[in-house]
Image 1 (tube, rainbow, N blue to C red):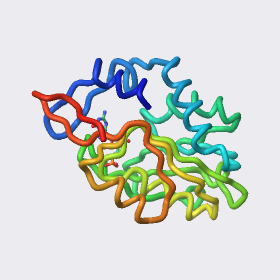
Image 2: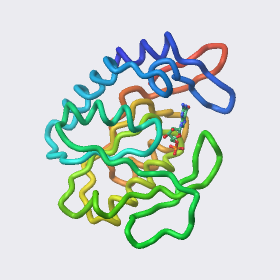
Image 3: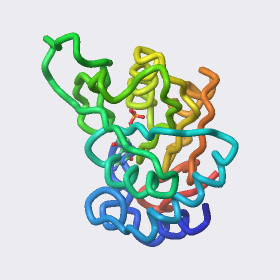
Image 4: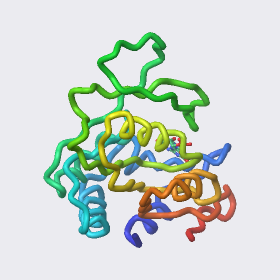
Length: 190
Ligand code: 5GP
């Protein structure tokens, strides 16, 4: 998506440790007009799917998913991150390793909000090693729901997540795929 690539070029900051900072429009201050364009683009790419729910993970995914969900006219469920290990039987849960924070946590979703009738589109801001996405896919499996696909805003193509998820047979659509990035030459797209 050229609009997004241009914005990353203009405002993205390449940090140490393969982290791309896009705080000024995606992860802290949020450009809602841009998010609406994401919604239109995903609606176009997943036009052949009967999606009735969007699943994301807190925190950064929520705002993005909400604006995209408006385009689809469906509710958003977000997985909550919790350090607790003793989880009652009321939730689906999966273990996720955080790329940016280097911690392991449980992602949980109440059984009330996901079930066998759901046809789910996953939305997340970044795809790096694929742990967050894998965790959400596990939750969809536990619920017996149908996974229609995953929509990612920025995929870091030089990390393993994209291959891992595509090799699982998941329909993965990324709006911008970063081929390489460094502090001197900036961001190069695929
Ligand atoms: P993964 O689980 O695929 O390794 O990492 C995905 C999660 O880590 C995303 O939900 C996002 O919150 C965070 N993340 C991964 N890479 C980056 C990055 O370069 N910049 C930012 N801002 N977040 C990232």
